[in-house]
Length: 492
Image (cartoon, rainbow, N blue to C red):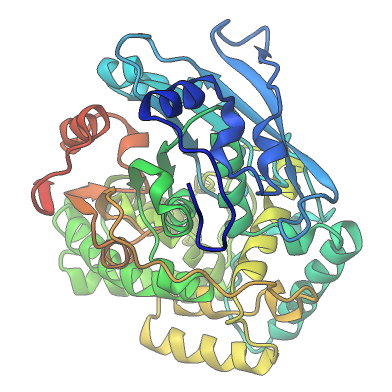
């Protein structure tokens, strides 16, 4: 066979080509001249993850380049895990999973997700978990932050703004001091590249995927970068990729106001039980009177006193009207001299885990996108403006963040997600972490996708929360690859 440049090559028959391809190792996942081919050739040593975990839950280590622009340079380790498909005959492939955060460890996801997936899904897929680069057991980073430095968000006040600026600058300085050589490489695009190396090392032509919260953004970036290697993608509680990342933080405030209005209606209908007001207007006044009183005299709780601003930072609780209402009633009673109110749920991770996740979070937020103002006064103005528009939480998302002082500018432009790759988005109507508007933004970016909205669904997570009206469609898609014919709404 003669090529255009005059070189010649032998012409293989179709049968010979088939035989050659069958004999090749997973290294064929990358072209022979691709410098990443060496990573596809690595041998994975699978061992039982933990004596306290099921014997079928196995772990291995995959090496990836720290810097994909220099694949022959420094390498880092990724911790991955699996539970093999239940049926070798029915097996379709691998289902990678990410639990969000960003920076949440995902190594145990196969064990956690196995009971939430239908038996026919578990038969068809190896469930693959992994700690993203920089997190957990995957070459972890830390900034060694205090509890106050890890805390976020912070209500805006003129009195505390200078302290908030100092805190944000300190976080950026500490992260640079502890992990400055690694921070520029902790990005969503590099995590997506890691996923593709894992795919190749596993010997798979394509991957399927389940992503939750931030994991939906990671999944969408993978489909944009590697569309031909994307199979069946389920995105649970989706973020709008066009907003990453300051826009994500700020846009939550609009959804919070809608949920707050819904809550006032629910609480007013139960005034006889909770005593917060017989009309939505009365409930609203009760809440804001509580906030003003708590700003003057913090309200005692079983986990310390809360100012009005502290109470507002728990705005995502309004996703769950039946649990938010008694808590607000208890805070009101405590502010009037009653017993200490129950504390809001607090993170259950260890200090080491929280430090690790915080470091990865800021590395990704600050390293993925260039849209972070450098002038603290811009954050002040935005916080004041957003609070006026969205009194419940406007200032919380617009306030000063460590990215204002990040010394490692993004090495790549933010990913523009605009692809026809198929995916199934599932979304609760009343999710205040990944709002319905954010999920609709993801749907617009993935124009080959379908979206199922759980009408009346509360909180952050559909599949991860257990059985729901979207379950049958999720199972059908994962087992057959068939998406619904159109976007759907279920529940009510």
